[in-house]
Image 1 (cartoon, rainbow, N blue to C red):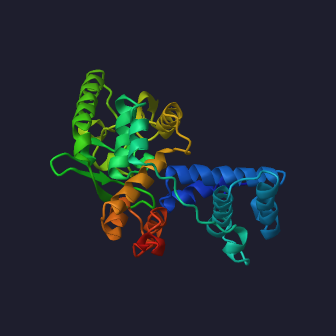
Image 2 (cartoon, one colour):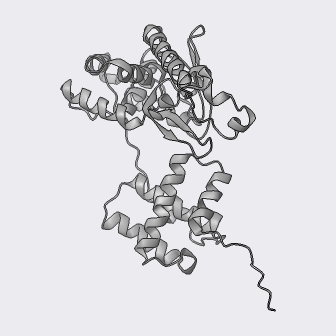
Length: 327
């Protein structure tokens, strides 16, 4: 009788890519973006396996994005990064062309900065948790995703500090809390406590924990310190916990509110959530704070990134004044 020995099960390419990204602790958003570009690359070449393709096909795909699709430079760079990761880390193939040859040069753009009066005008068009989010973006220099991921345990009202966990580049940092935001922040925390108490009474109250903490601390997903400060109204079933959990509020909720508020305030500038972070940094420098301090509060790896705000001030790195001002 002939014996049939089954060899190791072949893992699909997309699963391999996902596993490779998880092994390198890529953020969920980066994983989703890279997998999306890999799918589009495969479909662009008639569903041929990337192992049968190479540098020529990568260039063809990226050229189509730039010419036919007219994508932005940042989108083009993200697609290139996804494909270079696929070939180097998943397929184990070296790309002989320099990686920079696949990427367009990124011009330096000056950020949109709002005046204090403009910020007040936008604030007047907002209310409730959305207003508190935007006040934190400006008052603490947060990115919108960082604000959405705040948990109760990250807030230290006594020290007026906020612990930012897993910010851009997976870095932690401590930033300030404005005194003016404390009353509304205390009210929001009380709202979270009341909602969590109701959820516990209904055998709910779960949130997902980062990494493998849920296995290490099985009760933590239902504890108050891990609850999100700004949580979504609906709950979604978690694959890891097997129960419905609360996720943070989606950034698009605040982004849409900011856009509508800026329009209602009659703003002519393109106002986004990130404009408040830019304004935070610029206004600190205008107040005379050291650029290294601002760099630390923003969580920039290099002071060169923070230096862009000196150009916004039209002061240069040394606070240069025009000779015409001395006439």
